[in-house]
Amino acid sequence: MTVLRRAATAAVLLFSLALTGCGYNDFQRQDEQVTAAWSEVLNQYQRRADLVPNLVATVKGEANFEQDTLTRVVEARAKATSIQATPELVNDPQAFQRFQQAQGELSSALSRLLVVTENYPNLKANQGFQDLRVQLEGTENRITVARNRYIKTVQDYNVLARSFPTNITAKVFGYAPKPNFSVQNEGQISAPPTVDFGGGAAARVPAPGASR
Image (cartoon, rainbow, N blue to C red; front, side, top):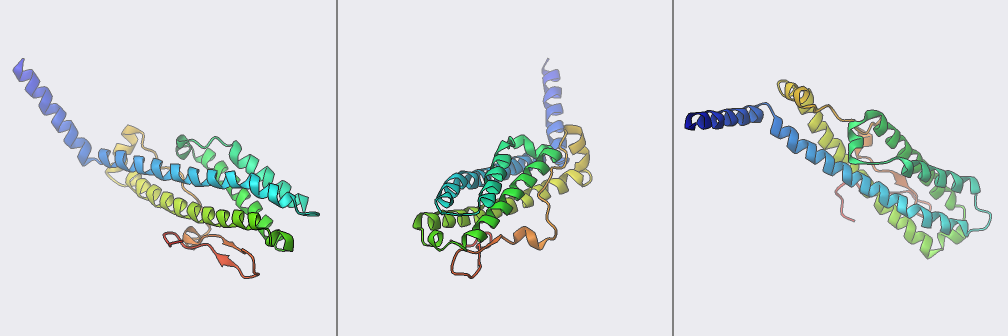
């Protein structure tokens, strides 16, 4: 019986060493890092979505404001928040693409809204509205930082999943490559959106990691 126990212990040790050598533990660690990075992306997108109703309500108080612009923002937010953004989304490329497209449409609608508001002096003088714009600016910066962190963690994970011999471990244990945010060029990864925050001059959101 003792011999069997020793043999079993030795087998477990050998199996553990084999898993370590083939990158299993690395997959476990990096998969957790991707999940954590994705959760932060979702938190920041939700933070932005929560700002939209107050922003729209404030703008509605301005007489003769372009209703089409407001409608696009409201519809874009509804579409973005209708997608169930769970941690599992990072394992579904098609669902991830729909989520990214919906968030992009909301970004575009908000950018249009902010541009249009420059034509309304009363809004520019409204302290409540200006406070919301500052909050939106900060949120856009946090989104950029969170997205960049996610992009980097997914890149590291995908390299592990596609490289030999760890790609064998990936196939055995079901660690498939994960979808990532797409950009037209590498420069767009780290370039935060440019938003005109009053005064006529465009103010660029601080780069990722910059102090606010």
